[in-house]
Length: 269
Length: 241
Ligand SMILES: Nc1ncnc2c1ncn2[C@@H]1O[C@H](COP(=O)(O)OP(=O)(O)O)[C@@H](O)[C@H]1O
Ligand SMILES: [Mg+2]
Image (tube, rainbow over the protein chains, first blue to last red):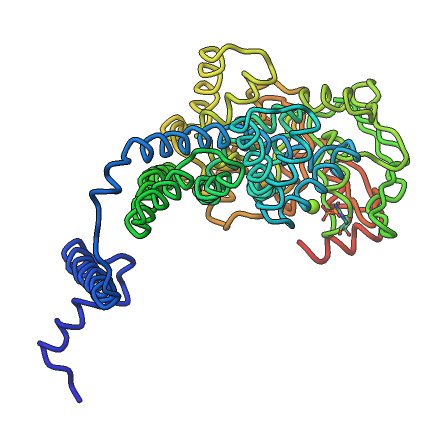
């Protein structure tokens, strides 16, 4: 059967043609609206048939708690982000060190941290290690635990970035007389940074979400706040919806920023 | 330049890339290495460049012995210019930055000095219009010429070129060979491995046939091509000319 003109233009509304990599502006906007309607509609249906009654007022009464928790989450995440980046970079270098014990230590750290759940690490580091070294500040202990956890993942991300630099470039660097440190500084890092950007942001987003687990050692971050509010008000759904929005408000800008940076890097080369 | 290599050996696993290679030249500006693939040309050049360490044997350049410990090798690499077959340039740096990097990072020039030197070098090769381009935006021939410019910019004692045209398509070979011919006209010292026989004849003061990790023949280009002595040379020339 020969497709009619109407059929063809209907198809263009939903499908990319063979030559298109991205939908055009109007097509994208139309489909975005469509999908949004469907999702929201489905959610509304589910909520209606569950017979839930909204009670935002009680929850809003505790807005200060939410804001405080949200700020704590941002603070903890930002600090852990910085520290874990340092740990990740250091460990990635250590894994490539010419000093063998350092290599083994770095590798062991990565394996142990990646092979165990964060929950177990929080308990062990907080109730055993922090106690042993008399680290009583919960926030600091939480930040360090999160940094140690995330640092292992970042180390692998950075290592992949470093190892993605072609051998021929390391030869060129050697041939023009760069030292090892100079090779990292002028050749490896600028390119590795660009290569690891997507994986690195992915890890940052995980870190922010993982910070919610610190509620188990009594840190008053966003998850803990939501949990408290839920128990004061019995408005579980409202509290946890706010909780989700709170995390989205942090992670979404990061994703958007990264996509923009990636695009800029791509045009540069 | 004066170059003395004695009993140089280098094995990879059980395979001897260099098998007691010796060669000595004096009062020559250019040495061209020819020979079958896998004969050991690159390995020899890499040792001369300070990028590889031999298992045994000695190298002396202008009567200065090459010492194979890392600090000495680093100093040595800084005195030598190297151009590989391909991928010489750093892809994240522009042509100009590729040339200025060793000048500023290694040779102690200020940024503006380095830029002047680099631009001068680019001008000499008629590449100044490409200064701001990244390697990806350049042709293979331009990339190789910029690699030569980078190697020359630091005023090296000698240049080592390992088949600088064999990764290029034929249309770009000529411009790179012309650039190398220019080096010869300027009396620069260089060692070149190549498969371009007529070019070898044109630019070589001495020409060596490297095969099975040894030098089978070493002479001036005239006798080398017209009256080769070694059967290995004759066989090789019969195949390629
Ligand atoms: N890094 C290496 N590891 C293993 N084998 C190598 C390495 N470099 C060179 N060889 C081997 O040494 C021999 C000589 O190689 P090469 O010096 O590259 O010769 P040519 O440049 O004349 O083609 C070849 O058989 C090659 O496979
Ligand atoms: Mg070779």
